[in-house]
Length: 296
Image 1: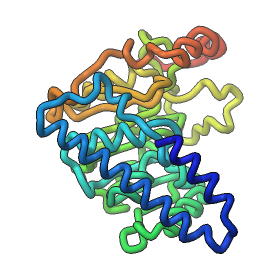
Image 2 (image 1 turned 60 degrees about the vertical axis):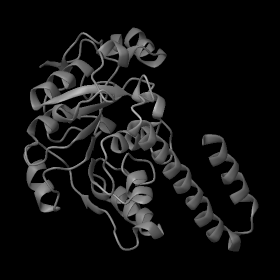
Image 3 (image 1 turned 120 degrees about the vertical axis):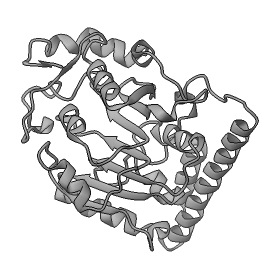
């Protein structure tokens, strides 16, 4: 799929400007058809009792996500029988590179998105408005600085339902404290960015500061939450770690009542058994190990 995407992008740039809009629409249609064919294949495997992958990571591909999360998310939604579902993403950025875009644009999901930067929100609204698939069913996008104190009221204010299908949180800061505070939704699947510079056996996060901004920090590696801390918090909230992307910091959790032979728990070591995590813990962790981390 990545090869086809690159080829089509080169062809797009080759054509004169007045031909590009219909070509872009054609390319988007190809992406949708490819993904729908993949979804049909996954459904067939499930109906025939075939376990397609040893790890959900094998389902990965990138359409709008930063890495291969789009494929993993679509696979999880398919195996759970979820179509035209609902999702929440906190820190959606400008829209064109986020966890929500593929499900919203190509699979008819209703999205409730937040970002703390008004410019990002303006760009995200323009991005989704430019897609015909969102013409009549635009995502709700709000410019809000998320804190423990306001998260539940903001989710209710934007109209988010309790039993949502997918939830993504990646704010490079108070992630642990925000997820701990959330009570008004109970997602089926959650994706969190954890900080894989922190050794696997340490349960740490940053002290809570509602104004914390990692982009303004003197030490940018002092942020977020360790994998162990997030796993333990999720276990208390009724979730199980089921996988992650190949670099070991974006991880997925499934609500316990939905665990099955297709989607089951894995170990923390499975997540961090990759080059980037091992490199980060060996060379980047010493730069911040003496910072004022909070044990949780």
